[in-house]
Image (cartoon, rainbow, N blue to C red; front, side, top):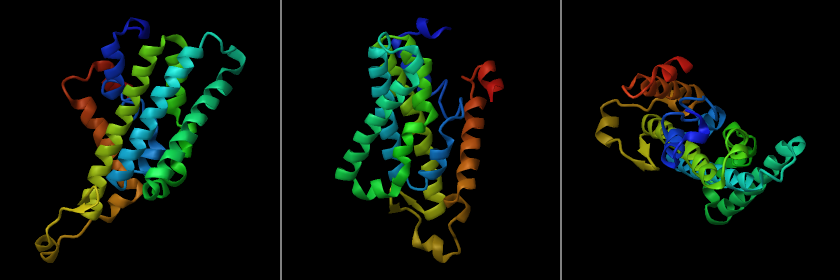
Length: 213
């Protein structure tokens, strides 16, 4: 099915599940490793990228007929960078502690291949509304994987969920210990690999999805 023939619903939901940018297209892995030690940072990062992807798709789609092809990448990066600066300033103003934990990774949204990829592959060829939905869907799909990975890493690595301890002290007294691997990058790799395997093993996965990985 071509992108031009997709309904608005299909355009939105395919980025969340069928063509998830992390689990299907294997994009945005670097930030998925770096910001998923805690669920709080993963949630904020997912929201930030969703806003940037949706708004950049919308703006680029609105400007697509006026952007010279020779400088389209420069224009796209300018739009994306402007949005990232706004997001970064908002985080510093209202969520300063989380902003410090995310460090440079908010700024690196500018170079995230999911954002630029959707602008190039979809926004430049489609109307504003479908482009907005495509950006939001892919951003939410990315955020969904981040939160899932962070949930497992924080639970097994620190015994917490969103910063709250959930492992009873009696377990600790009985010899339970946290998995140090989960707070390291290889732990995130293992979890992402399991999520990709799980997604492509479910009944809804098509033959093309199973062979694409």
